[in-house]
Image 1 (spheres, rainbow, N blue to C red):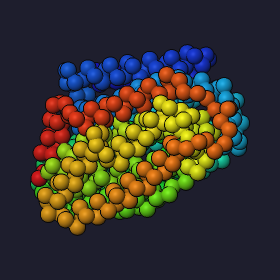
Image 2: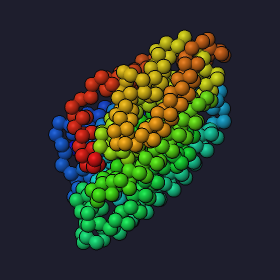
Image 3: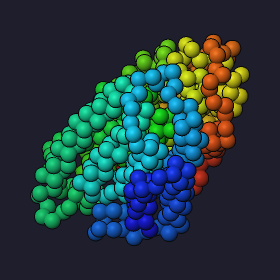
Image 4: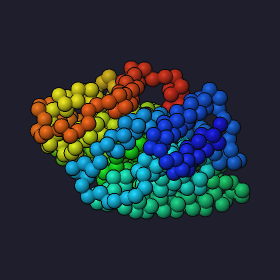
Length: 488
């Protein structure tokens, strides 16, 4: 089962470059997403056997990340059918006039890179060996880089290089973290860098080397996760990539980096050093919240606004894990809610960009009038991501805040409330200005809404609304298991 989950997107990625018809390539993308989602759903009914002596296995948290990845990929694949068709019909848009010329069919590169991106993220979710996890996270960078450069203009080239260079530096630091964990385990003969094995023998590992290793992992994977101050690649990459790619980067890729930090955190928690790791996570989480709040006030680019919102939510995940106990449960629930809501928002942002042909918040007015469905989804999505009920983000934010105050960290809780208030004011003021009023410029050239463009974000927002009212027992058990493993 696990092998099939990995091989399907790999084979699809290779096949995309062989097919010559754009229709066949889009059908291949959709078929790959459906098969991968079906296989992922099957692992919930029958836990699959581990592969490669335990290097590849699905624990509860890995299954959660894999399911989120597969679900978002399916939504993005459906959206991409209409998106690629619109790209072929529209050609160069006014804000993309500096495109580079290229000869190969863009659909082949897009579908191929998307499928390989899915394969790399699937390996991340299954990797139990720190070395394999490192390779898989680096592979996500290589697979997603062509997607960021899809429009081939000067700004996307700049975003691509920043993404590759900054994330490569981060992944190099994470490699040093693996070396440190390896040195820490040398006191025990024959213990591999498998997370379950390291956790089982954590009390006998070298404490200084474990701490050093976690610092490198936190900074390295924190760079990919978008934690401040290593977040500098994220606003550019999320803003310049196609919106459907931004949805995957924010909704799925950031979870992969978060999972890498979680794996290292588990070892330190098992070694009795949870407080050391937690303090570092809280520090970076608060810094991420503060920086995001500042840049979200009067943000001039609505895609960059969503990108800085991702920095904010990654900070909340870090704080939740750092607080421990119920905060860990809240953090994983928040990861689910953020992924669904932010992916939906980026897809709606793609609709707005297609219609108004600009990312400027000052030039977009009357979205509700011009695009009734997308306008309603835009307003609902922004209210959801800023934490208003009845959406799931409200519940998970409240859980993290409650765990913070219950743990006696009053100053941290107050700082979080101030930052969250700034984020709410900044995002809602911008989003409502865009939604209301009359359009400020002609939009006759823009594309109208289609079933391909509104159905995926609608379904994702409905899912996060359901999670605000009811959390399935299967998810609750995963959150409880994670909190138990992470220590109280």
